[in-house]
Length: 507
Image (cartoon, rainbow, N blue to C red; front, side, top):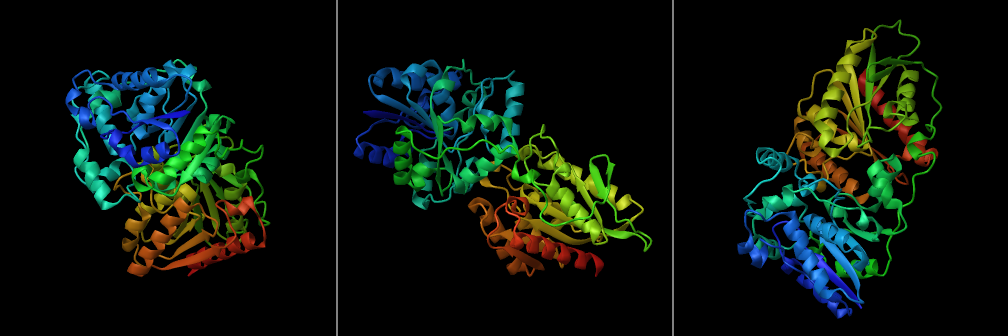
């Protein structure tokens, strides 16, 4: 017999699991969906001392009541994974598996606050914690309508009726539950885990694998054979949007099934050779910017292209992106065709770092334009992958010297679980202000679904506002196609995109 303990996230109670629980029981499992202290029907039980330890005790009480010779599977949705991990750490010998449902990766010593998706809200709560000496009493008001729920995750797939019920039954979240650090002894590390990723709220399995390949140290534990993954094409509340599919995933997880991630290759794809032959133009290093200048500059100042890498890239990644063959290759290719190529390193190490990266790009632009060999009135910016949101400020306030903007397999709207809110890093929203700025967009046919959706949204917006967008399609290309599968299609796409950008610079 398998017994599931289902723990819900902020503002909600056991009622959100009703349909999923019914499917699990129909499959022969026992199901327990406790409502944590201060939430749901227990909202009146909240007091000044209600914190994460209170919720861990709630889960421990269920474990102690139902554990026996059953296979006990603990499931935590979003915030719910924090009390689940705290309880499992103290009853590791009784727990068969832990399942994360669209949840972060809590760590010992960090509060649930660190996993709150909305960055502005996280900063507000952090100030409350500082004022209270690391703790806080009181409650965080529950979302008042469907729009407010978006601060906590995508509501894609949830019906209007279900959202109305979610809002009606929501209870204020005791602040102590979000601000008290999680304390783990390490015993929970021995418990097998699974995760249900909701691609409509951000990353799916392919995106997670790409981050592992990038060398993010915190993710390397995910390649353990005891860790498995499932993906659902829905938003942050799969128990409301696709309860049957979620139940199937939980049953498969309990049986030890699921996708396994693979360790990063010794030579990651981004360190493989550039697909086109390029001249050995020497690199000139100026701070965090590398310049590749054509040998012959007698014709006067030359146009320039600044290549902006994506991310997030781990802060300790070596070599850094400006030394990756793909970006050095693009810059040398530009130099070989008579313009100055430039590459920078910027500080996009986490999704919260876009403001830092924005400042780095602006500083790099000034370095490039100040070089006497560069025509400061003819510059193009070329963004890649997760660097796409950095294009928004330039689209929204186009300077006269910006003659072309290019984007290759870009993210063109922040993913929902990035928590960037309505800030300045939304190219889709900035596009109507770009005027007649030429845009060259390289689109790969085998793009990750969550990223492809942002590209299609951008192209729809371009059609609506009449933006000048040229699409270079790579039908069989993956994200990072240049070095991942450098075939004739890839080479032709790079050649065409470069030709278009340079034509706009020389017009």
